[in-house]
Image (tube, rainbow, N blue to C red; front, side, top):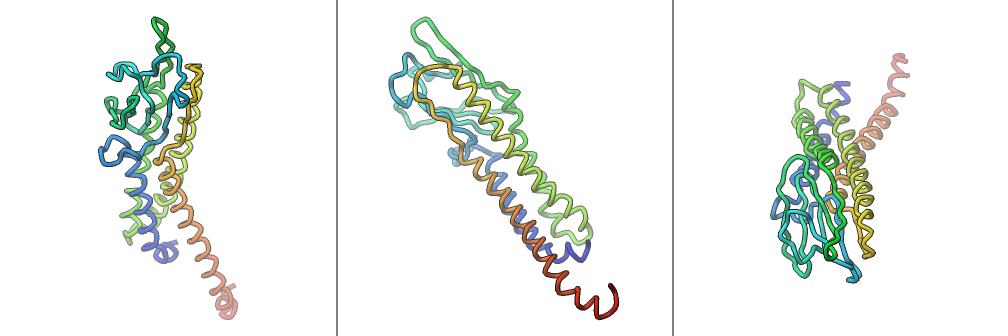
Length: 230
């Protein structure tokens, strides 16, 4: 195991660092002003323009209605109708977003609860696991621990991707409850694709390791047979 890990120590560090950067960007999510597009799910509302009422988010100032909501790890941001300036809800671990359709005195609402958005904390946890794996991959005295965290990093990346898919499916169900008659479009945000990229990077690394091990064993097999060690 030690000899095997020494062979892959440098490539492991490079692959893990790339995966860490990708995961960290998503963990910071849309709460950073410089990364407005690093969201997980996007909901575009009233695409046909024939909405019988006003769509809005509770406890916001967008009284003229909203055209799009973007959900991130720590908060959700929205775009008012006829505006490209976004506004974000208060950030924190687990947030509620109540979307309501108002038509005169009648209103219908649906809520994405904190129970679902708290699940998104898997992103920073995954980033933390990968961050631990990066220095351990270069540390000569802990090859087994480094390999363990490398495998754990891949599992964490896949787990966060599953959480994102489950969150988007629940969000689709909640939005349909409005029954607004408008053309509502839900799409996967750029952040999910970045997490998928992190998982692919780690998967490629492990496949590469497997091919290297197979090639190494193939080269050593004739030598072992000649020396009578097999």
